[in-house]
Image (cartoon, rainbow, N blue to C red; front, side, top):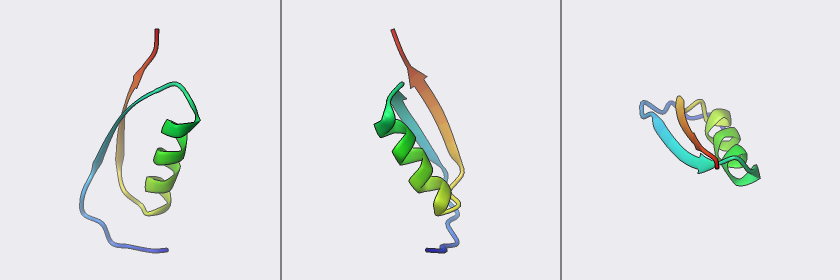
Length: 40
């Protein structure tokens, strides 16, 4: 799936697989991602 997306994404999430899945999906669509990782 190729899209010409001009938006950026900010992902706020914990250190687990759900956050990784979101980032991978956005990366496949060529969306620039900024990550704020939270942990204890």
